[in-house]
Length: 451
Ligand code: UD1
Ligand code: MG
Image 1 (cartoon, rainbow, N blue to C red):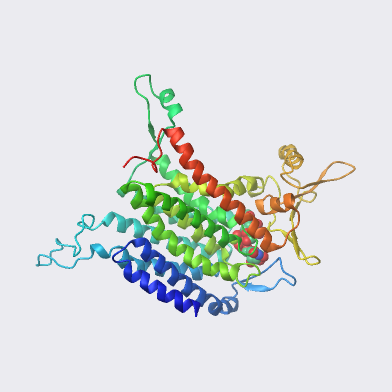
Image 2: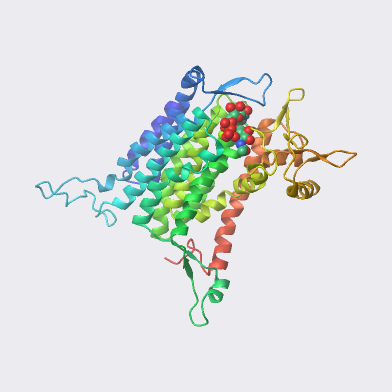
């Protein structure tokens, strides 16, 4: 019943979006995406198990088997939604009459000031984004099917991002970054202050790194029911908050990029909310690596195409902290077990920090003092031999385990909510700081630029 009501609202929004805004159309499609994903997940789940796509829920009594890779359903619905979105977005530019003879010269029925010329660059940005997401979803499905090795799959998102970078090169091509006010004179001479530096090809390396980082960082902040999709929804809401600020206060150029960002993110939130419904504690399905890659790439795409990649990275502060904290295990300075998710205790139903056995798998010798330092700073739970002082074990280095070290054992849903709440608060602070410190460092902020 609720789904039918949502569909009716969606139809109304999509219909009225012709005379309002593409954001209204995106909201309508988000509702359609939610209803379609919510309808499909319980129906296709058993088929996934039948073909061997399942995983054990390690934090439940008896480790029940759940369908894996269900994020592929959300991702596919999202792609279809984005296809159907195209006519709504470009409706004002559709050719309704021509001068005849096969000419395409007269294009617009409602020839408003902004709609005289078909925005081919916007369409290519849109299509390259969808193409990049399609390749990423293929990579995610391949990973869920074949469990590709970490060192093989790590760089693949950069290949998926090639269409995106090519369109950036052709349509925008800006590769310079602003220099903070206090460095401008230092880098230039007394008479000429340097206000920006052209990074050239390095800027493309930076954007490709973002395409690698965003998907992988979501995938390693995982292992608790609802966390992969929950953190992606929080990221989406934060990005929408930032976009809304620009729509309300920005210039025409920034408004246009942030409207584009909203068109990609709103339907993403729609399909993710439906997935969250089935993946939240106690989960009935697992999202799989497909969803983690897809979600991360949505944000990389939006940051790159919307030309606010640096701001987007600020929203990823918790994922960046988790990545940096994980580096010793990711680069094998400290033993990294196949799963670092918290340890479930069947007796009390709570999660405890999981541990790496350092007796059987000793860390690199030069890293031992660092481990001891982290232990004394209470940044890991370090167990040492009472007699010899030798290292016995340490808690696995993820912020999920760190929460349990700091706040004690917890039920899975509480842990997930705690991490999501932290993420939201940090993200809001990052947005506020971005716009306050931006104007202090650079002398102005593109949000407050006088129109
Ligand atoms: C990443 C993490 C790994 C973590 C795993 C959990 C790194 C380097 N890798 O590996 O430490 O254990 O994600 O997703 O940090 N699972 C649950 N409950 C959940 C989610 C997952 O029990 O809420 C288990 C299930 O058995 C599921 C499996 O994790 O089948 C999925 O693991 P997978 O996504 O393949 O692990 P990675 O992404 O390789
Ligand atoms: Mg995973």
